[in-house]
Amino acid sequence: MPTHPPKPVAKVWKPELVRLPKLTHARRLFRAFSHGLVKLVAKLCLKVTVAGMENFPKAGPLLVVINHLGDADAPAVVAAMPVPPDALGKIELYDFPILGKLMHWYGVIWLHRGRPDIRALRAALDGLAEGRVIIIAPEGRYSVTGALEEGSGGAAFLAYKSGAPVLPIVVTGTENELVYGHMKRLRRAPVHVRVGKMFQLGEQVEGPGRSGGNDRQEAVEQGTRQIMAALAGLLPENYRGEYS
Image 1 (cartoon, rainbow, N blue to C red):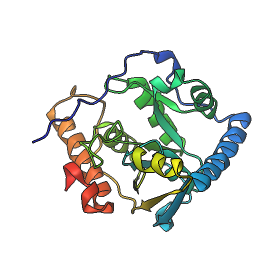
Image 2 (cartoon, rainbow, N blue to C red):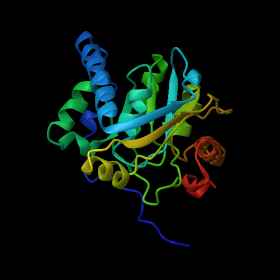
Image 3 (cartoon, rainbow, N blue to C red):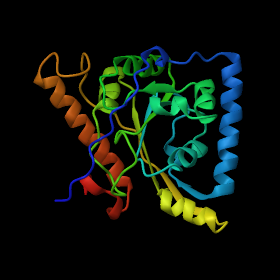
């Protein structure tokens, strides 16, 4: 069996930045502008086809789970969505010139990957309680194999704890080498977005982590398998990876 690099762990720790962004009038306007800009960028750089958009509900709360292949995942998926979502983003992006500031103005929920980030989970739960649409990539990084990697338990915990429905959305053709290869030839990369059907996880859990017994941890692990199986079921066989 091939070995893959371990999942990333955030090297910076900025818990003071982790919060649910308030939807002020200015932020709503900026999000509407950003959503339109993402749609324009996706149209210029990608040739996106979308299937299953009839499965997208008219209102939240909603937990959107996606697979993660490359830089173009977010533009392709967000451009296809009818509303600009709240998203969890890795804290390392905060210090990126321009991009970090734009993401902060938009109001992402900053996340310290690979570390116990209770603030991020609480912020996402608060957003779901307000009826927002939260988007998360359970794999926690770009796939190093080009196919599904093992999912982490954050998405399942949020779904259990909030009771919000889960909507799986998958994207194919967004691998960096494909997208940037087409752009170098002044061509748009063909990308496909597929929206699955909503579902809910069964049991409720009381809190994150193993505290409280093995039953809670087993429920989260089972929920994670259910979420990843839903993503795998929407993907071609060569993209299913760990969940073939």
